[in-house]
Image (cartoon, rainbow, N blue to C red; front, side):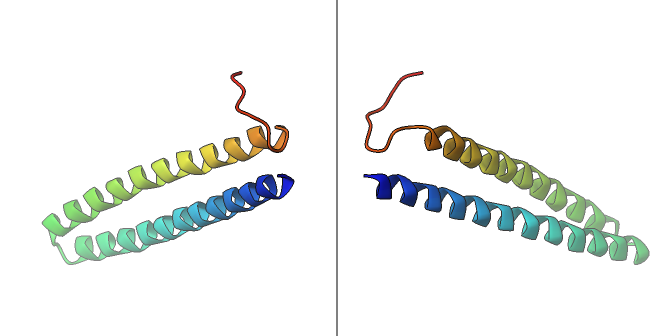
Length: 92
């Protein structure tokens, strides 16, 4: 049964890495969109600026959600490391 617990930790760590990578990519995309917004300002396309701002706000919300998911994955891994292998569910 210890192997199953170890496997669960590996999967949790991999999921956390993937979520972290997604956060980094979204933040990179936001920086690129900000550059697009700067170009719109320079070219006087006002409606484009508003659209870029709205999209980057949506992305900021997504980053916040992903960050929360990353935190929760970490909590699961920390909490479950102390549990005995093959044990039943315990209410705390």
